[in-house]
Image 1 (tube, rainbow, N blue to C red):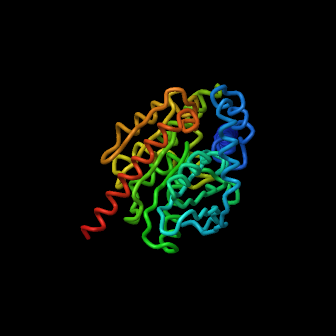
Image 2 (image 1 turned 30 degrees about the horizontal axis):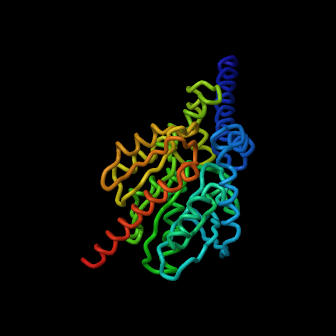
Image 3 (image 1 turned 90 degrees about the horizontal axis):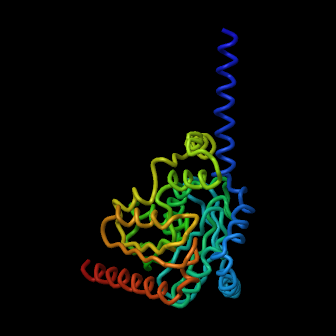
Length: 317
């Protein structure tokens, strides 16, 4: 009996230890920034894009902004920078990537939005930057945060057209919001290098880091215990099957972090108005830097279609 209790206790401690390890490596918001930086610096394609990215970041820094705080649906304090470009213009809600830095991840999108005359809400995802919380949920809770920001903007500015825009996890978040009950002034989603689901990208990264795929067994438990969410039930592939707004996906074919095959999987699963653009020489999050002309043309054409459809629907009402 005593032996059985000892064995059971050791097994329980092992499971809890695995869950803690999974949480700290996958979901705890304050970790892994050095690893992300190292990936960027060691990757040739990403390093080549750095100089252009630095130029675009300097343009973000030079643009006046207003600091904004709101409370998310679950009480977490969220932070964003609002850049007012033009009265009455569409607003783009921009969401950075996994444990990312908003102005770095969205510097290309920020530049393009200004070029189109759009206002910008550059948000810090929960657990990152100046936002509260300590857990990154791969879009599961972040998509609800996006709705909180939509509601804030709608209450402040009225029914101006709103676009959900994001890179990497931010792109997945934008797509994961497409099946939600969004206000009618949310007219489209723009997703740069999104992953297909939390489960798929976590498994992929585990293998990349030399860990057995079966270690994922501990991930749902850690998410439940420490983050109070389920990474198995949500994802861009699932959401686009019931998408209520048009969306565009832009993805580098040489993406070594989120493979292009995930973009193709999302596109193939989706319904409604959808678009997919690939960038032959681009790695993770560098499609804009690799071919700005193609990227701008694709996004501008999509935005124009969404705004035209929105105006037509308004006239019918």
